[in-house]
Length: 107
Length: 118
Image 1 (cartoon, rainbow over the protein chains, first blue to last red):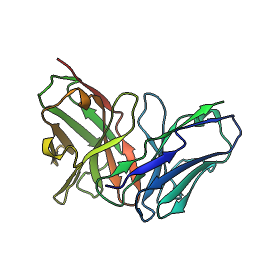
Image 2 (image 1 turned 135 degrees about the vertical axis):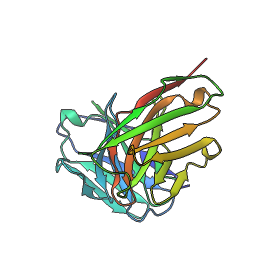
Image 3 (image 1 turned 60 degrees about the vertical axis):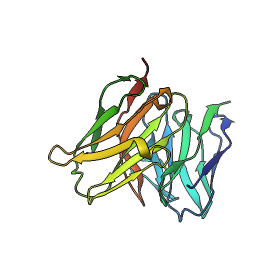
Image 4 (image 1 turned 180 degrees about the horizontal axis):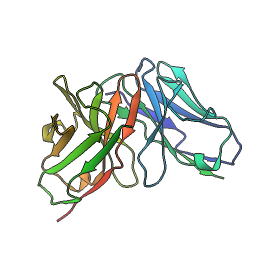
């Protein structure tokens, strides 16, 4: 099983700041890495797939990068609606696995 | 527009079987993609449970495999999950979803809370 590790667990930021979230895989996932945003009481929303491709309707302030085992989600300028929990997920190998999440909270 | 909707009992007794169904609209489940279940215990992270591909393949989380069955009803455009011998640790919001190797989990149901309690 590929273990996905996200850091930090919590990120305290102010609106307008740049947020950088990290995700590490225990072995290569061949760019089959996705990012999701989840708000309370809602299902996760797909933000990024294939490491760096934004899903339909996702604002350009969200970007993904990385390769192999190290991946990053960057939010260039935090908006009020971006404070949420973010998960990474690999789909290269079964079982599918998710990271433990990073909570982006208002400082 | 693809939509998924979970249905099933919200309360299941310990040792019994949890049964959920996902009704899909706007897309035929026989038209490709994986169709799966993901759960989230209250206040915790996401755990993939099981997936079916209508060509005949099924995939299960090894930690739950002995208790799981996933199936599909193609005329109804639905797929279902059964989890046997449940305990309190199986209490979670259960999501059905569409996913693929290269495009992530692109459609999710709204989720249904299943509580295991006597």
